[in-house]
Amino acid sequence: MIGQGRYVFVLCKIGDSAMQQAVQVKERPFPMNVGEMNFPQSEGVRRVSKVANIVRESEKTVFERLQKEFEAARASQTQEICLVGDQWNDGLFATIRERVHVEAERKSMQLQGEATAIPNLPVYEKITYRVGNKIICCLEGARIGIRYETSFAGEPCELFHCVLESKSFLEKIIVLEHTIPFFLPIREAEIDFLSSNAMKFIDHVGVLLQAYIDRREQVRLIKELYGNQIRELHFSLPYHMIEFVLADSECKVTVSLRYSDFLATLPSEVSAFAWSTQQPINGKKNGGRGSQPIPARLQYAEDALRLMSLPEAFAEIVLKMPQSLRKIFPEQKSA
Image (cartoon, rainbow, N blue to C red; front, top):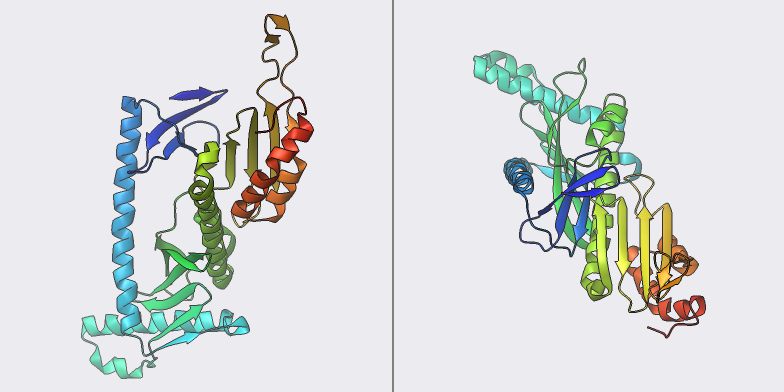
């Protein structure tokens, strides 16, 4: 464990990755991951790793089951309709609800042997709807399934599922099960939107997942492209808090990003500072008395991070950093 102020972190490895996960157990709302750092594992850390592995295996099982069910539903469809603009509306969602209710009632009658009453039920086509990155289909048991297809830079990423249960028009729709990461606020979205506007809930979750993937993949990309220049990299599980330190022989550059909410792909709070590693530290240098190192703000870096994606901003920072540091610390040699 590592103590940092009032906070305690437990460090553990994630799978085969070199990235370490810091599971925060006190006071802050989200854990932070710590990159490129090695720490001895205590018994507590090993227990946390074991629990995390069990959770991942459980999530994998749910994903595989729902994926098979979604594929079976799509295979049995009569057509797939792509909706654009106002075609995706409350009236259409009400029709989808009616279809799952009728099919659930039809199956119930079949099981009870009430074949004579079945012809009185309306017959609907089996239709799957595609709305942007969402596929919506009717599942057995009065359930509505939504599959979210995320992407980054035009390339497909993970699939996520959300299953809604709609027993009747008199009862609230609920989230029955899902494969959405536990650290994303799906429960809050259910409370805020689902009971009053199911369509808004479905769309909100789609934006939430895509924003998470965008933030995560931006961090992955800077690790791939600039890993040799990053000394430390820290981030929360939802990637809404990101911090990194750039390696430099004569200066230390720290960058901190905060995103206003889980739907954001550009940070709302940015700070970038440079410290000279040759300035006096702790009031002493060469036996004399001196001041603490004074950080210099890198305004150009902050501006780039607010306006560009993280990989684009990182490239801008690295390109301009030597000249910027020479102006700030003229007494030092350029890096």
